[in-house]
View 1 (cartoon, rainbow, N blue to C red):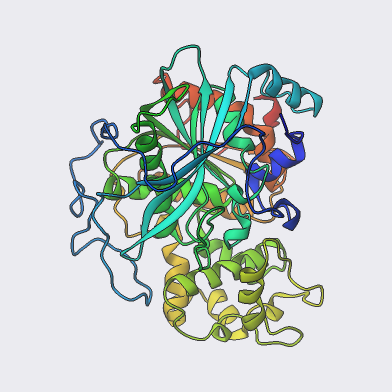
View 2: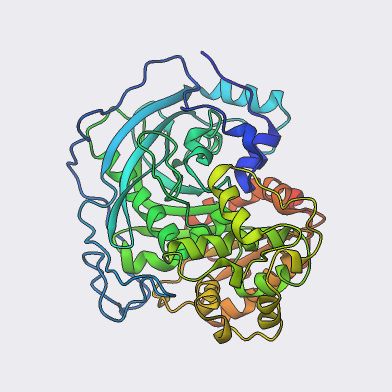
Length: 489
């Protein structure tokens, strides 16, 4: 069997953020010398409907949640995007194709983790089998194909296991940057399966790692398409399992969301959209690690304090501008130079590679953003920014117009010295979310940055998830903690 070593560094990269172009150098994810199995001309026949959700915490609904379509009052699109309506839920999550990627037994997984110093999770409880899938989702009222992984623990006899959605951190903005494009992109789903969870790991819209190209830019830090593709990936998992496949385990009706960085953004918004878009899903817990909850606050930080947030925010501006139809000129927000015409160069960088850094000539925020934008941000004059301010506010959870219909127990994990998703901004935002009805538990990993804090917290996160699956209440809801050693939790 052919495989590459699973290293702590690569796991950390997969858990939290982009790690460079070197992870996206081949055209397919294989990782095994076994024959791939899957569909080519037809998709699996669906014989059972996905499981139904438990009773929601409120009877209020917005739109036609029985079909996944929206009523006139539901806030789809907006911010200058041409008007559209969601397609009905029929066909969403349909499996177009699937292919086995790798299968490893429990001792092999344990040995690989031990050999590379990643022993915090202990031994693998099960072997694991991973597939990559292509499935149907929608964006702006049109069908789209996108890709992802699904993984299954190998049991002596198939039985139901809880489902964990793994939403990955930023790995780029195009097909070439998708986890399913990376020959080692399956690692987190593999580990989740080895710990007993059935996992689905979407690549997101605009990141087709295999099969036909998406031919579009990933809508980076845009809530609606990120949430919808994530929710449809869960539907795709259930449809795959309903296709009479010889699977080693079966997805139960309990769904846990788990994402880091951009993935934490994805799970928070998937949870927010689920009662409106996919009300049949029974989401019982959500883990949002190092999540950008407050795009407005991070904009204020990134546009005035030069650092990692500065470039990430600029990419989010491009993501919102592209998804809403490229209305307006980017030079209204991004600098046209000197020293670099960021308004022209940044979209090309995002379209052309998986890892970008601001050019070394750029050393201040006013070389990234137009001064008029910085002035408006300092004055908090979001109305003056028009559509630019609109989609940044739209990506701010505490300002969302999407009604909060279901309260999901949620763990927010941060790193004390995270200077990308700047910790003080998100920590200050959490009481607002609690005031709006969120039930949050919070941990802040002392001395840890963006990626390493997630890796330190993984054992605690899985313990927390199992407690939620066992029905345990939150121990300290909405207590915002000071930094602690997350390896000792």
